[in-house]
Structure formats: structure tokens, C-alpha cells
Image (cartoon, rainbow, N blue to C red; front, side):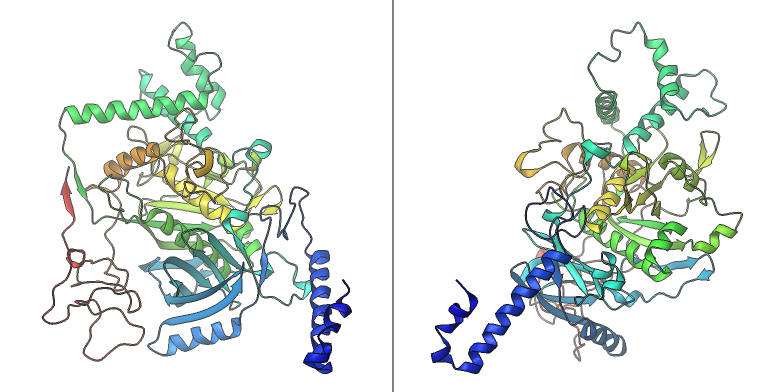
Length: 585
């Protein structure tokens, strides 16, 4: 039916001017839809519906919100005691009413921010945490970018949404009318593992790492480290003596599967031996914080465009990783272990670094060589160190990290020592945001960092012959699955039973014991809902507080009400009692 016929029936009842107004609006909407189909057409032939943003995101929506007002609220909150920021917008057939509060807890109190030229002034007040006003179980983490736009993740029980500045995906010359884009995690297509490889090369590196120490332990002379970095020669040197061994590699069994089985069975054997000998170790449950040293090379800086943008992007990665790790129950006591990450130091290598002889990364390198170069620095003062880059590595590799182990060197808290002929720090990893010439969206790179840290913490890839750890199906595979996952299934951001067991063993032995490098939280954070040292109670912010016994954290302070202290003559539930979390195992 023609538009004129559709509206003509009602002209006599609604008035001519109103009729033509609606008619013109309808034509305008059709015109806009036509423009969207032409300008923002799908970029992949495999996408059958929706508007694709790039090869990774099969559907997005332009996002309109008053970013000038957001910037104004931020500026006002810095001048006044009010620390809350609010905005709302409509997208994906729902209304988002977001409430944010300043939260610089991702940075250590003594954080150092520097570039090639010297120290960097960065406004840490523009880091936010919050929730949706109408969803108590939602979480929102965000950074207000230097352009005044939000870079945010909105997580609900059923979906995760990503909000980004549109300028990251569209050329500035297009003069876009919308400032931002929004898309769902379920609309993200991770790199095709069958076409481009798994995206994670840490397992291959672990094979070398495993064989390096395994072979070294067999040698009669332990004076020096092995120098070979070639996997084939390392495997050959160990396997030649096992040629007639009936327990050797069986035909048809992949080396990956064999090493995974060896690692898990080996860990269980050592664990059981320790249990039989009734060895006791002290686990300090107050030690929950892993201090990070993050670096960005000159290529990452070139892509981001400024030192500030580099810091913003790396901060968003740590925010997202915190949301994944915080509630994981590694030790099996039925409660989340509150493992979190804090940025202790950031170094941004600008293009000026290319003029310095001390700069280690001026050329093009394979992914393993790049990690080894990064590992040549001493990172003893940190739990982990990571390099962010914008390099297109072989095989579509997105990340690489040294795997933590109970017996061999590598991973979390590892100290600088000899490896492959030189001093190296094996508590390191790298992440790239470039994949076959295409920019990797945060929905992919955030999970990449979480996955690589999982290796540092002691988890190899989940063994594919173990259905408990690689269930597939409707719930999907876990975060340490060897190949990229879609990110939208229930298990995709969780750790498998295999990973939980491996990680708990390594963290207990290397990070959370008396000598471990994990730190206690630097100070109590009133309003996080966790009763910490120095707090009488903590029921969250005023809009979340369900405890009548406790003064909540407020955006505007109330006279005579000190947040996170007990109200007079009241009784609290057990959840509001601080217990010294020192446990003997």
C-alpha cells in the first residue's frame, strides 16, 4: 500500500497539517533507512541480517545520547561532593538507565604513569563503575574518554552490551551524526579458529617451556640452561631416548592432548603426594590483589593516537578482567575468592622510542620472539607484566603468555632468572588488537587478556577429551578452551573444573601464601558491599543497601552519618561482620 493511501484515510480526522507532518516523517524515516543500508551495509557475506560493524561484529546499532551532558556531569562531580553520573538511552529494543560512580580502585595508590617523554597526567576520576537503575543484578564498567564519550560494558543476567565511540570504526571524514555504537556480545564473531588458528599461542609456548625444564631435569649436567628455542629439536632430543618406550606417543594422539593429560595427571600426582605427607601451607585469604605493570609499544600508541587513549584502553581491559575473576571460587569453599587486579605502573612507548637505543621493539617480530624481548626486563616488583601491541602475528595469534606451573618456572609471581641463555621474567604476556589487518574489538581482546592471565595462573587449555571441562553444546565451552568461543554462552566467561583445580594449586603455592606476591587490598573501599578491615559494615551504596543497621555510602554526605559504620542500637546480619580471613590448610 502506498504511503499516501495509508495516511490519506486519516487526513479528514486528524487535520491536513498533522497529516502532512506524519507523511513527511514517514518519508524521512524511509530515507534514513535507505541511507543506513547503503552506508552501513554488512561487510561479510555470511551475515544474513542486521548491520555489520566489521568482520567481528555482525550487528550493531548507532547510539545517540547526550554526551555533552555526560561530560558536564563529570566536570561538575569533580568540583562537588557528588560523584554520581547518570544517563539513559534506548537501544536493542530496551531502555538503558545507567547510574555510574567514580571508581579509581583499578589503580594502586602509588601508581606510576609514564611515557617515553616522562610522566603522564591522567584523570583517574573518569574511571567509573555502576549499574542499571532497574536491574539490581547488572554491572556497568566505564571510562570517560578524552573526547567525552563512554567506553563501557553493560552486563545483565542475559546479555553483555558494549558501548564504544563510533570514531573507532568509522573514518572521521564521514562526519557521522551519531557519537557512539552499541552491540551485544552474542553478535560478536570471534576469529575463525579453523581458518586462522586458535588465536592463542600459549599452549605451543608451554610445550617448549615444559620440555625445556623436563629435559633439563634429565640431564646430568645442570650448570646451564638449554639454548634451543626450536620446538621440533626440543621434542626430538627428549623423545629419542623413548623410541622403544611402549608408553610413548601413540599413533593418532595429538601432542596437545598428551601434554594436557600429562600436566593434569602430573599435578594430581604431586597434589596427592603432598596430601599424603600432610604438608601444611598457610594461605592468607587477605591476599587477593595482583599488581600489574602494563606497557604499550609504539604501534599501539600509533593506533590509539595519544598516551591518554592508550591508558584508557588498557584500563578498560583490567576493569573487564576484574569482572571475570572477582567472583570465581578457585579454592572450592563455596564463595568467590575476590581475586582482583590493580595497575601499579603503566609505560607508553611513543614513536619517539624508535630513536632510543634501549627500546627493544623497533622491528617486526614473531609472537614468541616479541614475548621473549618483552620478558628481558626485570618485573620482580609485579605480579604480572603485559605488553599491548598492534601487530599482526602469525597464525592469527591474539595473545601469548608463560604458563604457571607448580614444578617449573613461569607464570604468576615468577622472579627474574635464567631461561634460554639469558635473564628473563616469565611472569609476562602480550595482547594484540590487530588480527589479519582488522581491528579487534574489546569484546574479543578483553577475553583474550583474561584467557592469557589464566595461563599465567597455571591453567593450560582445557583438554578436549574431558567432557566436564569441554562440554560444548548449548552452554558452550569455558574461557580456557583452546579455540575462540562466541562469548555469549553461559560457560564462555567461566573457568572449567580443570582450570579451577590447576589455578588454585598455583595460586596457593606461588601467590597467596606467606611468600606469594599477591597483596592485601590497599584500603577498604566503602560501598563495594564487602566488609573489609577498618569498616564496621558495608551494605553498598544508598540505593542498594538492604541492611538497616549500616550507614550506606552516599553520593552526597549526610551530617552525622559516617558511611560504613553501624547505626546506634541495631543488630546486623552475619554478612556485615568482619572476620579475619587467615586460614590454615
